[in-house]
Amino acid sequence: MNKREFLKSSVLAGLGVTVLGAREAKAGTSKKKNKGPKHWVWENPKQKENDQTLKEKYESFYKAGIRGMFFESDSERHFRIAKKAGLETHRWMWTMNRGEKELLENHPEYYAVSRNGDSCADKPPYVGYYRWLCPSKPEVKEYLTKQVNSIVEKDYVDGIHLDYIRYCDVILPVNLWNNYKIEQTKELPEYDFCYCETCRSKYKEKTGVDPLDLEFPDQSPSWRTFRYKQINNIVNHLSEVAHKKKKPITAAVFPTPEIARRIVRQDWTNWNLDGVCPMIYHGFYKEQVSWIGDAVEEGIHFVNGRFPIYAGLFIPDFKSQAELEEGIRIALANGASGVSLFGNINSEVLNTLKKVQ
Ligand SMILES: [Zn+2]
Image (spheres, helix red, strand yellow):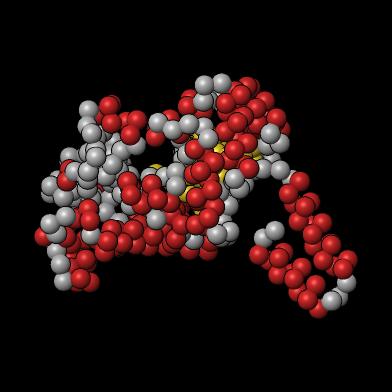
């Protein structure tokens, strides 16, 4: 029961209008529940797929309970065919991690700077495509506003989906440590952001301290909070931009509120969203399928009903369809409104989704 329905039935019951009134409200709720979960898929639209193939694919998605698409790039053809099949079409946007050439060439000053003094504009951490912007700069906020506006103004775009909406990983998920040959048991300066002039002076204005002078910056609660708020400010502003055009906004976030804050400074339970897709990729954290339930439960607790949670599942992490089914069931049982799937959506995956409807 959502808040409005709860209030409606409470008011009716409180006024003693009729028992029927309350029962009707209840029936309305259960009817809503019968609609089943709402699932999502992340997809990179491929131009080589023809209209008929796309029509069949999206219709089969719909039949399996998928209700929304996150498209990684703009393709009016894909969006329109998906809409025709009954799916919501959302544009998936890389937000703080942006390596477009024109930005790198014309505005290297927009990029985040590490505790070592290196900029993501010319020395990206971990991988070449890690080009993180500084969230404290008004120009960055303005640039992202323009990007979101240009997306949501299109009539075939139903909503916007923010990805990479955070700082660079100060700590990587444990399963990736071996790939980079690093043991990140503490916050290392080359992965710790942002120490640009803007961030340092804004924090100093507030606290009287330059973050570069902190002896143990990883242990400073106010320096952490400052950084959470820089991203919160960007998200809540972009949320206003989308809502002005009457388009919903969602985000792909780290698996639990605690992990998100600790390893990427992402405080997603304080965002004004219409839904969130925590990437509960259990393999990345060397976890078992059962952990998906723990993660969903934690998110549900802290979001406290403000927006739905769609558990993000990484298909290659599941050893079998039975295991995937278990993962979906655990997510739903713990309060997820559906799942968002990353990976190849083949007929086996669709059949698994049908089973849990
Ligand atoms: Zn900065």
